[in-house]
Length: 398
Image 1 (cartoon, helix red, strand yellow):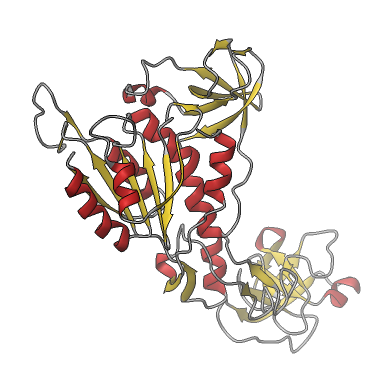
Image 2 (cartoon, rainbow, N blue to C red):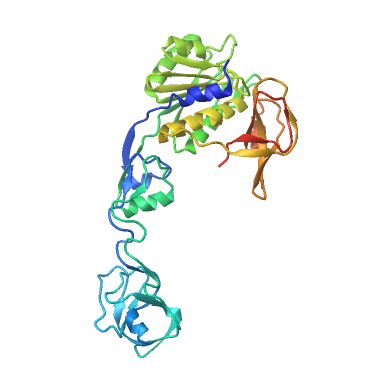
C-alpha cells in the first residue's frame, strides 16, 4: 500500500497522449489549443473611431477654431475618406476608420449642430482623443494564444479575429466507464430487495461531460471469464478505461486479476487513504486504466483527486496547478493513520475560503454529496485537526 503522494506522483508520471485534431471554430469552446496562434495583422488594423461624433483636425482646434462645417459622413465598414479642408469636420460612427487629416474625435454629447455646422462646447481636448490607434494592442506576429490554452469565449473571439475558422486542438480521449456487480440494475428498472440502481457510472459520465468528454457506459457481470474477455476488447478500443467496483479482496472481485491476465501493467494497487483505499492504476500501451473502489463516495473522490487532474494534465501537457487551500471551521478527529478526505461545505467569508464538515454515513452514503461542495484532504501524520487550520481542498462543483 502506498501513500497518497506516491500514488499522485505515479499517476502524473504516466500522462496520456491523445494526439490532435483540426476542428471548426464553432466547436472549439472548452477544448485545448494544440498550436500557437499569432497576430496576422496589427490590432487594431487601422486607426479606429471609438465614439459616435465628429472627427476634426487637432491643429485647427489649436488655432482656436470651435465651429466646423460638416464635409460628409464616415460610417463603419466603408473605405477611408479624408478632409479636404482642415477647418471642416467629418461625421463619424463608432468602429469606422479614422478619416484622413483628422486626429481627434468629439462625441455627439459635446457639440451642437445647426444648419450643417458643428459648434463644440468643450474647453479642452487632446490629440488622438477617442481614437483606438493602429497596432496599439498587438503587432503583426505577436503571440496571441499559446499552445495548451483552454479555449473560453474570450479565446474564441481572438481566434475569429485572426481568421482561424479551423483550429488545431488536443483530441479528447475515448473513455469507457465500466460498472461491475450483479447487484446493479439499470436506472429505469425497479430494484429487487437485494439490488440497487447504477449510479457511479452516471456520476462519472456526468463529470466527464462537464469536461466536454463523451463516454461509453458498459456493465460487466461478476463472472471471471466474461470480465477477462470483455476487458481485453474494451482496453484495446479506448484511451482511458475507468472501472467502478470489483477491485477489493472479495471472492467476486476479479478486476485486478483480469487486468493482469490481459497484459495491463499494474503500477499500484491500494492507497493509504479513506475513502478509496482499494484504488488500482495501470497502463497497457497507450491505454490508461483507473480501477476505482465501488463505494459511491470512494469512486467520486478518486475521480476528482486523481482521474480529472490526470486528464487535464494529459490534455495540456502540464502538471496541474496547486490546489486551493481552505480553513477548517471546527475541530475534527480521525484516528486511523490514513489520509482522510473529509466532505465539506465551502463558504467565502471576507475573502477567506472556509470549510465546514458535512457528516455522512460512510463511503456508501452518496446522497451526502448533495450537501457538500468538495473534500478537504487531511494528512495521515496527524489525528487531531483543529478549527482554523489550513488544508488542501478538492472541489467537485463548478
